[in-house]
Image (cartoon, rainbow, N blue to C red; front, side, top):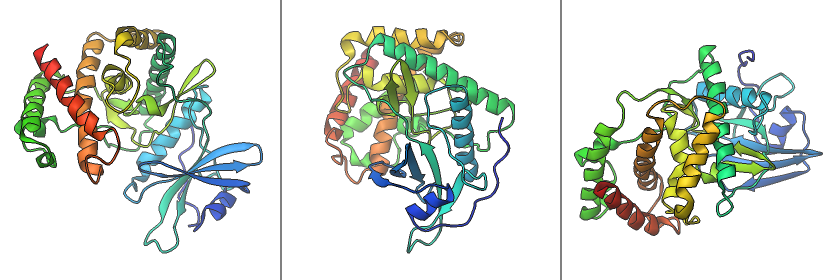
Length: 327
């Protein structure tokens, strides 16, 4: 395990001066599109790096330090994840204050993870590698927890199923009445089926297709910014969600969904026993994540057509829930 981190270093006010804190001179700085954090891809000599500047709302230092601890331990174990860099004073987490900003923001420097996002090219062999990766990541997280190195109590995923079942989920007034009634019926049926209390472990929380990278024979993961406490089944469910229901403009995998699903569990079983009831819990959470995606749209999108696949998701979600209720 790694020594506890020190306090933030001096506040710095531009990307290149922040990089100097890490002893680096940037040959090239490229801003990258991201939803919640500001990301810059950095070329510095032979190094390919990412500078992540957290959104102002992400000021939970303990959560970020835990994220970095997890990445460091996983990278040391040989897993294909970004590795944190440290500055000349041994710090990983710096304070960055944009010009004109009222307060500093947290910033970290990580390796840029090589690999490709795959959609149409997903195969059972590749899903088995993802299952193995998830099992190994959970093992590293369990080590950190056992050593008392988890510095946050935040949840990785917050599902508002009770509010949906009660018909009073905030933002739902933006949906047609028939859609709201369907969501209420599905949530009311899901709630008693999910275990209460659910298992609570430290998890990634969002291992969907766009956070998985394939490099050679390895599966890797990125975007650990939402990691926190939750049901470990959620990490498997997040991988399967868009394979079962291609509702985000992605390839239709339904013809081989069973093979992909089973391969994911085979990969998990290669590194840890598959707990009794886990496959059923994962299948229920795959359905529950339809609510999670909708909550993101309602809470963070300026309108429900903000992304091209938004209207298709709304229609497809309704059909998926009707099919699930009928089953």
